[in-house]
Amino acid sequence: MSAPKGALVLGHGAGGGVGAADLVAVTQAAQAEELSVALVEQPYRVAGKRSPAPAHQLDAAWIAVVAGLRAGPLGELLLIVGGRSSGARVACRTAAEVGAAGVLCLAFPLIPPGRSKSTAGTATSRLPELDQVKLPMLVIQGANDPFGMPPSRRGRKVVQVPGDHGLRRGVGSISGAVRPWLRQVIRRSEERV
Image (cartoon, rainbow, N blue to C red):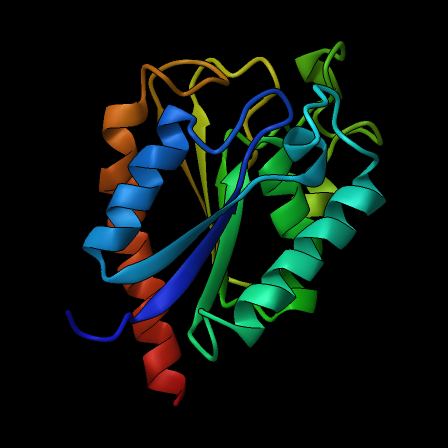
């Protein structure tokens, strides 16, 4: 096998682990594009807890794991980060600090649980977490996701797939969206060298 073209580091959602069907689909798509993939399980899950830690603790743990991967098996590979739901939020908040070249979000929870979709443009929206990312970004969102639909903008492509926040109905569509985007991020990085 030839050397990997880059690395994709993925985090899980608040209520699940790294075995989620959409994370598995993205892993397979990335491997087909010759990327190494690391699936990161947050410390609260490793400890057997069901509730996520506060955001600053999730971010610190993620940054430490990515730094360890960069110091070891991933070395100087092109780095793309991402995750599903809560993991996508962590990836967005830390992308610049870990030196990512792109961010992949699955089921980004734009609107906090218990809020209405009409709050998508208000202070309760998590849109600023997406907007702070100044890198190529792909968001794959269920068409009926109760946590809202992020808007596309320059540098941020949003792909709607069938289903809701779980993305189980849309899992078959994920690879078709991820693979060309990964190729584009890799090509863009190679052109800069």
